[in-house]
Amino acid sequence: MKIQPLSDRVLLKWVEAENVTKSGIFIPENSNKERPYMYEVVAVWPWKEIDWKIVRIDVKPWDRVISWQYSWDDIEIDKMKYKIVWADYILAKIDE
Image (cartoon, rainbow, N blue to C red; front, top):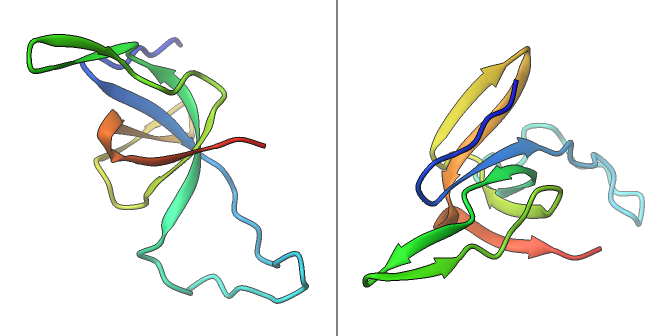
């Protein structure tokens, strides 16, 4: 099934977070549930309109991004969990 978000929305897939830091410190599952989370961009509408001008959205499929856990809508398709957010809800793009 192919999903194409509309307007200036982005479809994200949650990326499993590490439970142990690089230095070996264990991070409990219940620690700070309000923190931002890492996601992978699955699909994106390529532009948005700002003040009557078309502006390109700076993420593309396969990019890793950071967004708040409780932002916008969670959906489930074929037993996979996704999130649809406004492009403005993406806090950062991760370059690895």
